[in-house]
Amino acid sequence: MANQDFKIWLGKTVTVKIDRALGSAHPDFVKNIYPVNYGFIPQTLSEADNEEIDAYVLGSDIPLAEFTGQVIAVIARTDSEIKLVVTDGTDFSNEEIKKLTDFQEKYFTSKILR
Image 1 (cartoon, rainbow, N blue to C red):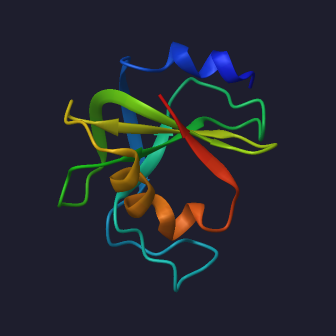
Image 2 (image 1 turned 90 degrees about the horizontal axis):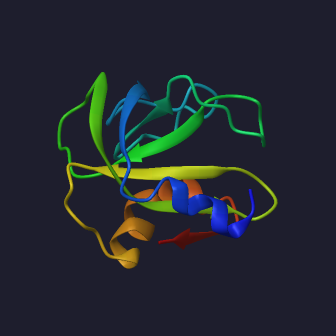
């Protein structure tokens, strides 16, 4: 994805189907427990992996099945895919986003785009 293309997502309202709820284990790495709700945007396509675009849902302290909210940032993995950061409209600083997503992003080189 070209750097400027991420801007189409910022501020957009999206519905996230949660397939890895807060407190659940990663299906392949069971010691990796999700501290946030994580899912995908139905009917989208990531050119990086030919699957739906993934999203972190921040701000909820309960496991969810689905969430509709606003994209406040995009995490762009170098030479790879993007991940949307979705909230109820609450803003999170880049430092807060990094801390909340580091459980997974620590394995990749990525940057937070706004």
